[in-house]
Amino acid sequence: MLAAIQFPSWIKPEILPFLPQFPLRWYGLMYLVAFGITYLLFKRQVKERKLGYSDDDMAGFFLAAILGLIIGARLFGTLLYDPTGLYLRKPWLIFWPFSEAGQFIGFRGMSFHGGLVGVIVGTIIYARRKKIDYLAWGDMVAMAAPLGYTFGRLGNFINAELWGKVSATPWAMIFPDAARFPASEPWVQDIAAKAGLAVEGAMINLPRHPSQLYEAFFEGIVLWLIMWFLVRPRKTFKGFAIGLYVMGYGLFRFLIEYVREPDADIGYIIKLGDPNASIHYFSTPWNFSMGQLLCLLMIVGGGLFMLWRYLVARKASQAPAPAGIPADTPTDSETSQ
Image 1 (tube, rainbow, N blue to C red):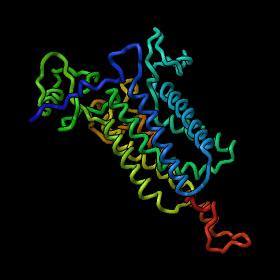
Image 2: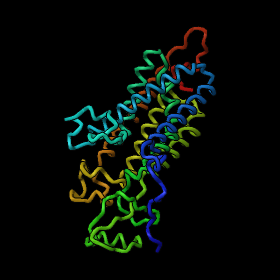
Image 3: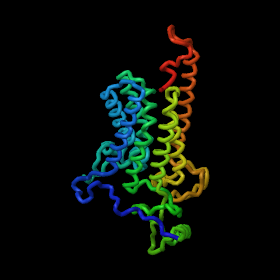
Image 4: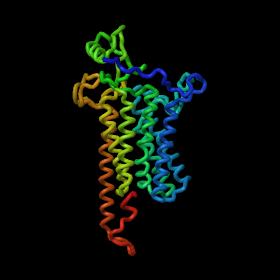
């Protein structure tokens, strides 16, 4: 059997690793690419529908989304996922990209769920100020965002972070900074043997699921294909794409979380299976991480939102048509196309 795949040594987090005085990182660039792709796909939909919105309105909407994402992602990532209480004691570090020693570290700890909340809040505020039809714009964003999100997860992979649980599958990968395990443990020896690794020394780095790539593919590419090619061409009630995106992401992420390693300091939040199960390898489907709980809220919330919007659209379609408009002509309040 071939030995486990090693994380490519030529992949570096820095864009110019030979110039440490310029700490430009691929992860930050991937965020810019993600927003750029989402904006272009959004703009294409505006042009297809001949909506006539100005570039200034669209740019302002996306600027509000970017600011909301950064604020929400950092607040969730530093407060909800940090059990040490560091950011509660020193809240100025939440948006400070330097360590206490003065070293540039960027914004480590960005929560998708917090970013989603931030985007929703930021864009709602902007839409109300500009009197924009938020549901129609939100539907168009939902059909574009997954492809952009793909690049965010590729940034995680380049950083060699957010790796998955230990695995002996042929495509499992050894990440250089992942936790090592005692070579004396029987389960460690078993995984190493299945992965074709020689056990040398007291500790060993085992292969893991490349969960970043799983997320890039399913939460990004697959979900985008569904939204762009199946949902976009159809006339649906306003809010349908938003609700489906929230549910779809939540479902894919919930399942992938089974093979993604939870934060070591948090572990499993709910333990309905083995209470002593290791967070490092999959052993029970009844232990749930923080990410899974938030995704469950997304699935339920997205479903309830879609149901509410469906009932609103149905009620609007049954209402008497305004004078001068044929009864079988759908009004703007009924569809998002």
